[in-house]
Image 1 (cartoon, helix red, strand yellow):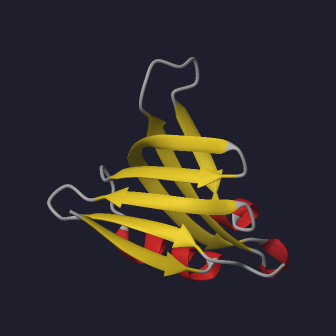
Image 2 (cartoon, helix red, strand yellow):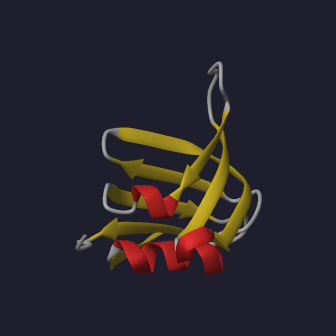
Amino acid sequence: MVRDLTMDCEEAIEYIKNNVKTYDKIEMSYNRVFTPGEVINIETCVLKGGQKSCTVLVSLDGDTIHSTVDIDLEKIKYDLIEVKHIPKDDEEILITIDSCEE
């Protein structure tokens, strides 16, 4: 069973920070990019100048040359369309991004 949620981009990033764990599966759609894979790490920090960063390291499903990617959610948040979180022992959660003002 899949639980459907609708959030703005800020709420979706907070959901990922608080609920997505290492080795969970995640599928992110942003701009024209689809990134399915296993979460290796999530790192949050505040950069110089007060800019926030939330970077998700994903080991991509499939056979690609660069099979691990870093995605800084703060940089792509205005392009974020959908996030599917598949925890190891729980129901799938599909987050549809409603809107996020720049």
